[in-house]
Length: 190
Image (cartoon, rainbow, N blue to C red; front, side):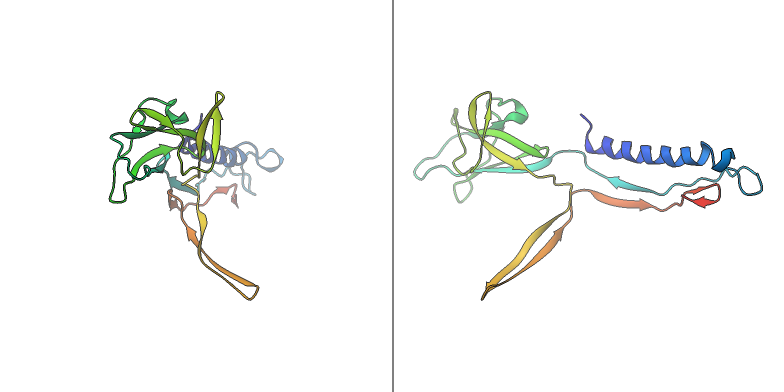
């Protein structure tokens, strides 16, 4: 499987190869990159946007609040990402509200999971989706791609049939930097 960094590298490499091939692989009428006077033009510079991506998975937070009057000693979460390993990722807690939490790095997609409470496997009572793996019912979680930018609803109002909303741009986890160079091929901007 190709990760994000490899995919980006392949995409940039392919673009460079195609640009350089167009430059050296035969200019117009077989002149192989010669200028109007027939002299070979060898100057090639490249404009490559470089994206610094932490190719790790996005963190997904799981939260479990036990039923009132119960105090589990050990709570963990396990799922498809670890082949439902027992005991799974330990959840910390309880916090002041009685909740246990764990952050698990997951790739984007739809994942099946279960909670392990004092050694007993159970569905997440707060999960509204289910996913079956091998015929077994599990809780389901959809993990978005945290590297992609998104829009988030900031405010909304509905007054007398008029709906208004404001959205905010939320940048992804990737950081971008540019190296500015220009590609010239046979005296032409490519």
